[in-house]
Image (cartoon, rainbow, N blue to C red; front, side, top):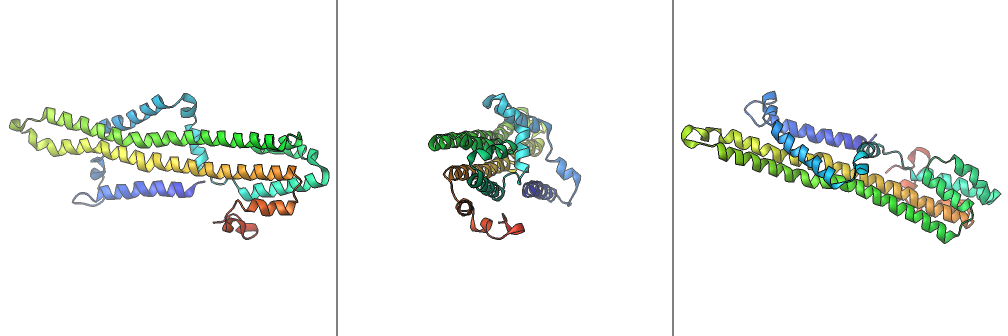
Length: 270
């Protein structure tokens, strides 16, 4: 589970709420929180933001939103060290029994990309053509991931804009209904506060919800692409008959020194 994401988002909302409660004469009163609750502002900011997303992205991308949350919460899915160890094992089998012996191991592999790469060398495809297929798969996967992250970038950019729209709507209604001679000036403060709440909602959506999601998705993409690049380099080295020990040292160069160092529990720690 992505603990840092949960802690960060919860802490951001917590700090904001505490700051809201300190705005009046008394500290920590529920009434002060209710000053920041407005149904019309929620409707304009959130409703219009999601409406723009629906207008901007196809249904398959929108329907993948639950998957996006599953991806950003799973920080343990991509482990480059375990991938390297699998490749070293494959290299040992290939040197001992030949490339055809990898077919059974490939059929047991749960990762579709890893399995595809193994089968490409088992089928004795040309090395350049096999690499081209693998790299094209990586490029297309990364493009799809960027499209998903771009949806949250779009939401992050339009949410503050609709916050301002809501503010303008509130100000217009306030000015239209203001009658100084009838005592309407006394309600300016309350009306102005209500109008500004939409701007607050837009900033919260952009910087506390959508922004972190886009960043987390790009981090998961980087982790996945690193593992896939290691797989490609490892499989191509196996096809050329690389020594397993040399292969391990070669693939470890994809990782930082801290990730490479240590054994057992120390591996993979930053």
